[in-house]
Every structure is written in structure tokens, then in C-alpha cells.
View (cartoon, helix red, strand yellow):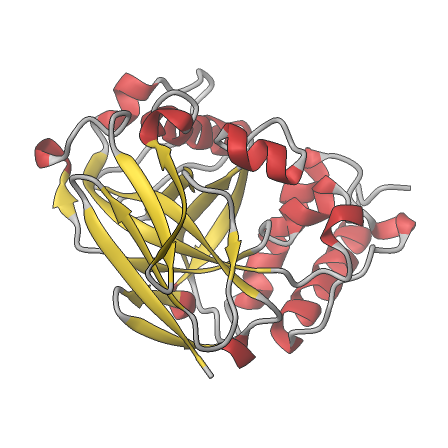
Amino acid sequence: MPPTTAAPIEDAADRIAMARIALAPLPLLPEPIRPADEAAAYAVQRKVHERLAGARYGRRIGWKIGCTTPVMQTYLGIPNPCGAGLFEGTKHRSGATIAAADFRHVGIECEIAVRLGRDLPARSAPYRAEEVAGAVESVMAAIELVDDRYADWRQTDTPTLIADDFFAAGCVLGEPLPFAQAPDLSTVLGVTRINDTEAGRGRGADVLGHPLNALAWLASSLSARGDGLKAGELVLTGSLVETRWLNAGDRAEIEISGLGAVRVTVSE
């Protein structure tokens, strides 16, 4: 049976969180505790976040949205957006050096991030992009750090990936720009470079037509689960470029027109 009661949800969360903290490969969960659908996956994810808060990850400070662009939906084989947590202990500023040993296999994604200036509370009606725009305080270029921490991610079911925050492993943030001064986010160009060589590019419009559509999706998805977005939270709206995997010694940069560049180095 899928995890529809407290015990299987707790057991699934224990296995996921322990593997993540120990940097151990996460295998397929035993069928009796494996989340059967997205609703069960988010119930497990909430418990995983509680367990990570007591480790180096710290408190949740926001959200990432996965699979918001055609390139990422094709890459992962998942046709709809998914939400995952961001944590204080894995947040970095541009120019950071991260250790390869802190990941199983680190990768980066090219993101537009927003910081909220007011709450978007749970409600019965879905949110629209025009509404969530009024809650955005600032916008910035960001690198999402991801980690291939699965025994075989192509064989891992989607609900388990969601329960484990969907590869999420942190973020590197650029300088914030007041939202009122930002360019139209649908028109910006994002470029990923690895060791000074271009590795991919994409536009803001690739993110569900506009990054604010992704933010509205997240607010609506959380509402459906009785939750909301809070002032001060960060949201990464989805990668403009397919995930690029890094090796020790690599230097990576993403640049988004009108928002600036963000850099990270992976130590030997």
C-alpha cells in the first residue's frame, strides 16, 4: 500500500533524510512506503524538511520550482512543475567555493530568483501571475545547486524524487534588484558557462511563458495543500538551461541579461 498513514510517511521521510544527510545513494523505496502520487510525495517532503532542519541544512527559507521549462521537462521526462525546499545552510553568495566532497555529483542550473515582500496565503482560488507580481520585492540571477544523489535517477519514480526535493542541493545568489527596476523577465536571456565555455542558453519566456506564471503555480500548489508563501522567502522559478554537471576544479557562471552574473567554483 502507498504511504497514506502516518507510519509509512514517517518511514519514507526517515530513509530519504538519512540518505541525504549521509550522502548515501537513495535507492528505490520499498513499495509499502513508496509515495504513490504527488499528494503523498508532498506529505513525505514536509516530514523530510523537518528532519533536515536539525542537520547542516537548517531551516527552510523558500522554494525551488522544477520542470518549468521545455528543456527541463524533456531532460527529466516530467511534463509538469514540481516544488522543493531551499535551506539556510546551503545558501551561498556569488563567488562562493563549494566542496565536491559535500555532494555525490554536483550540478548547476541557470535560474531567475525572486524574494517576496509580502505573504501569499492559502486560499481556495488559484493565484494569477498578475496577483503574485505585487508580492515580489526583488529579483536576482541565481545558480541552483543540484545533486545526483540517487542510485539511478532515471529509474526513480517521480513521487520519490519530489519527496526528496527533486535534486535540490542549495543556491548561489546574485545581487538583488528591486522588482520595479527589473526588466520584463520573459525577455531576459540566460547563459551558462563552464570554465569560460558556453554550455547552454535560454530565455525567461521558456519558464511557463513567464517566470511569474511559475510563481503563481507554486502559490496555488501550496494553497491546495493548505500552505502559503511568506514574506522574505526566496523562490527559484526554474532553469533556463538544461542541468550541467560539474567536476572538482570546475568554475561555473550563469549570466542573465539585466540581472547580472553569478559565479561558483568547485574545490579540488
